[in-house]
Length: 262
Image (cartoon, rainbow, N blue to C red; front, side, top):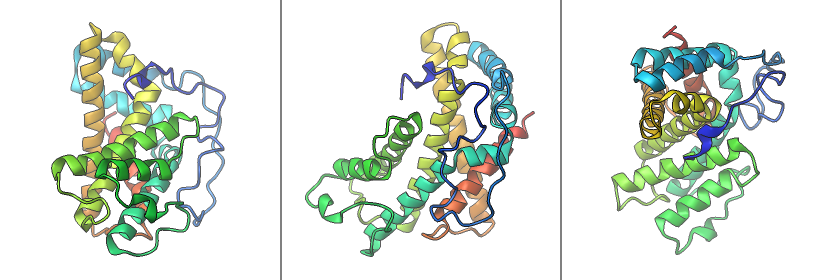
């Protein structure tokens, strides 16, 4: 995803939540979301201005305010922003279901076309690739590419932390960590695609810009982790039935945190 920041992001005149974005949960349960208006012209300009200043100076205040404007103006507010990320929440639900089923020896979710026999004899890195490609097969979209990369990163982090880890037999805490990491990486990718170029363009040089872009993504991941912890402390426990819904709520919480900075 190193070149993804060259994107100019979505422009004006398209729905704030495109028609191809899936419902927040695979079964489409819950209230029917209201149609969203078309995006206004220059909707990301306030975010790009602040993030450009961050790229130039490294100011944490500019970074926080840039993310706040990204959510509030660029994506139409926390609720609409979370709807835009519904694919992330849905993939999180599928990922939880796969890892839970592999760990407990139960059936893989019916909407995930993963043949467990295909994992036999494979290395842990190969298993990670198979899971990522099954959940988000190549479809030529930026969202699909970013999600596949985010799943791979989340699984790789578990293996880096514990070289003896078995992705087909993860514990509950490890599965929760994978889901949190996936959601965080995918959101960071989305922000990079939409407004990351502003950071690079205004940095004093490419190396500094690349470093600050990585710092921005690390900050986003930190805030997602904080939102997950808050939900857990409030008594939320992730399971197969609520993993997608809970991930969507965490995304909305994160966007609300961003908006609190402005």
